[in-house]
Image (cartoon, rainbow, N blue to C red; front, top):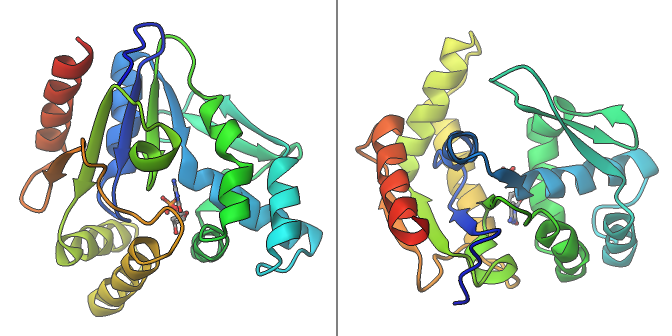
Length: 230
Ligand code: DC
């Protein structure tokens, strides 16, 4: 591993609902680092495909679309939503977070030409003073020489319960069992695909957050980052 003191990378991978998103936002803010939400890129490709009438199984056309993706992340003053996301000039911050966008992302993400098409774009986020990269293959494929690699996980039951509480708090009524089944299905697709499956990098430090609060996870992450980057 070649340490890069100018633009170190902290790669954070893990399954859906593991708390990666919240941890990565907090970490990037605490360190003043850039943030790459790689899942948002797959969501944007799905959205662009819908917009341009490209079928979600047309790998060549999707890869072309991914190569030419016209996107922008703009800082906002809202701490809950620190970046707004724009596709071809249109604000799609909310649109990429729908269930449909998540499902579309998981359909285009296994396509190797699509993944290849956005590799350079993902790597372009690595800039001084450093990068927090959030995804499924940050430590295994995109930033194999990252200074720190963390694999954040939790049992499927715990992840379903967290999601359930979030939705209930928002007044949205859902079935815990349905959420559990949907998380299991997403895990299956992410972990068992042929290209860039979700696995911990051999040099990743694994944090199982099943019995931890988000603050406890963040403490552990800060300790790891302090040891690896200083
Ligand atoms: O983290 P998310 O829910 O926004 O990710 C959306 C989809 O994109 C998810 O099904 C997995 C996929 N993804 C991926 O294959 N590789 C990444 N680095 C990030 C996300």
